[in-house]
Length: 472
Image (cartoon, rainbow, N blue to C red):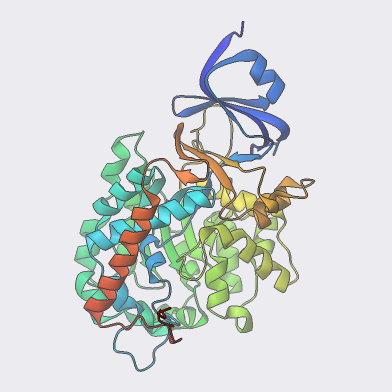
């Protein structure tokens, strides 16, 4: 008789633990009780030592910790096909910022549910939403309904306008009417999502995100830093997005943005800089000296066309020990499951390749650390939350099976996931959600997008003729 019991035993899998030793069990198992991992090890050993209430046979498929999308404007996924180019400043009277502002709580719930199902299909169990939700309660309900995790921040915290000139389609009168560029409003909202942290079992938690890009005054920056530190949560902000942003900031302050943050005491090991596409040498030194973290969004790097005006620094930063994680930014033209592949292609383009193992670190343990949750998430280890993904061994992209790191990072994207556990509960099984009706989720978000486009006067015609039916 076995000496131990567990609720669920995931067995017969290629277990990629992402633990400090980066151990891989070619024939491994994961024992789960309640919301926690009890033990990870060789399949034969755990089968002999555990009596399981339920056994899940991975059938030789890859088993890994749930991926974490470290930066995802979750509702922007519903912008697919609406704009040919969201940065277009042409003749249309409605821009991407108007689209963001025209959302309702129902729209946000619909988009979040759809994006959540898509992320589960890509092996993601958590995302970090950067303060672009008008109704966080509606979105949180959708996250919990799907069965994922999320980190939410207050809505668009900003009190300066100058750097909007660098990317004009990020803002519009309709957006700033709903989220005023105002110091008093921003200060009053800093901690509004932190109540979610009172329940340690909550799937949706809160943190602090300033919009950044030079849109925060020193007073707002320092208040946000104090709020984050007092409440033991990370402080995130966008910075180094495009070249023009940094030039405007230097003209405003006489120094580079991250150097200024360092001088104010805002940049430290619990501060997370999102994008960091275009930092100058002084800012690189500030990153190194302060130990701050970086979230890189490679699909956004591609879409911004930065190859002509930015040096690729992510591989070099990784070698220097800078903690870099990966985010989608907005899954308008791709899915979160494409992020590691996009990062791979960018790094190859600059002839400084990121290895599959490094990409997996960026999508798991580094992302968990950016969220301030590395003690709970990011690897398969005893005592951590049981957020576990089982990939199908029957997927063509799982072969040849000689290098599971390469496969998991670069070929096994959306569609190869068989089973997902979040907090020890099976929320996805046999390639489908067990929590929501997927067809209903997809229909609801499609209807939502059509209605929002109609409200804003946006023509959704894709430009190609559609053939009609013919009588026979």
